[in-house]
Length: 225
Image 1 (cartoon, helix red, strand yellow):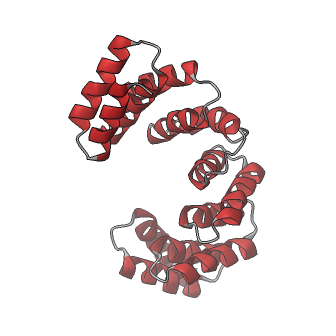
Image 2 (spheres, rainbow, N blue to C red):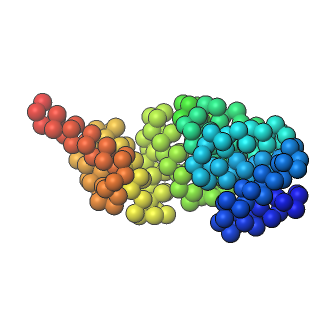
């Protein structure tokens, strides 16, 4: 790692993105093949929400370091932020095959991308991989529960949402998920109770509001039938 990159990291860790960026740019000016500087430039731009520039830097870093799982994960994270889940799948598939690639964040992102591309069996496996390493990992619990719902395994979905609630009783997304499970089962009164509780915890969370509205509409339709 060059001295310019090391200096940039000090600024980066101190939260000074402008000075960090300049150091990384200087490093690339001195050596256009400085993959670490390119990777860190991608990270800076991603932290700023400038995902187009972040993507360019991350792709350049991966081209120089094709076996670096961290570079691949950064590239995939940028793809996810851009809503490009399908494009992120092969990147994460390769990254997770690397020796020592047991980072829970990487596997959780892989599961999320597989979920969004309806690869349910693989998504379930990825989320379970995370939970084997970190049993209370909220995103993996939510992901596994959603995946179970998608394939119609409502018992697994319920059990997984309850695992999330055992870790955090104020988990509005898990309460909303339970509401959806009961709605799928046709237990609308129980669904309504869970949905109302989810909204009382986080009234601005879109999935909670959507679940509550859907369940109320279903109850109203039943009453008119």
